[in-house]
Length: 280
Image 1 (tube, rainbow, N blue to C red):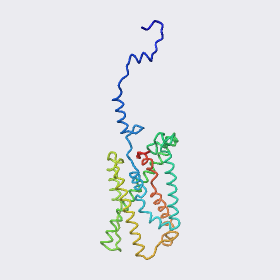
Image 2 (image 1 turned 90 degrees about the vertical axis):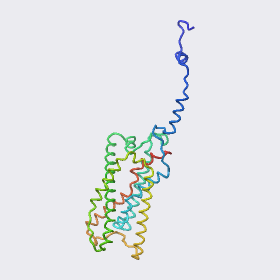
Image 3 (image 1 turned 180 degrees about the vertical axis):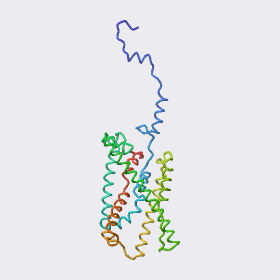
Image 4 (image 1 turned 120 degrees about the vertical axis):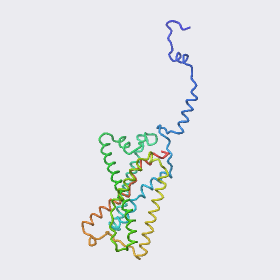
């Protein structure tokens, strides 16, 4: 019996008052949950090298590839490839920076940043988050406009090609791309309402196959055109001022710069691709 004045050990008292409980069921539940969730409490990532490659191919070999030949024709054989190398270096540098920003603190066990804005918030904070946010959303808005214009021009080119086949090459075949822009915008709005649309893994596989397909078609058509002409056309400085006016030359050169920059759109979705990989 405990004597008066003796010191009571609270730990021993709690252990005697509350006997050990069997936690096997609870621990088993936790072990089962670890098979479905990552260390950050989110669902386990299922992305692999193949799905990530499909995302990257879809982003890099996108519709921007279709306008590269026209851009090179405007800038010439010197400035055209030089601008492509320049933007390739820029996209490599920005992608390397974003890859390093995927985790905050420790590069192996640090907190994951699931979006570009999470990475900015973790590394900068304050007003810089708002500034980078405006820049990002403005860039995404511009990319969406670019895809809309590229899609409408492509559909218009098909319609004009059919018109030339039916009415001859001398036919004006004047058409407007506005209906195609409206149609493409409506389709974008409808697709944006699909829940978890970004989680459809096979969609990027289909898009990657399509990217390779129309890139291959463009390559074959270019080779056939060179074979029919018997010579590789173009010049070192691009389209000359005599063929077009000086203002048109400047405008076309700036448009060519924009087309080449639009073709390098990998970094804007790099973190989102990295988040999907199960090894990250």
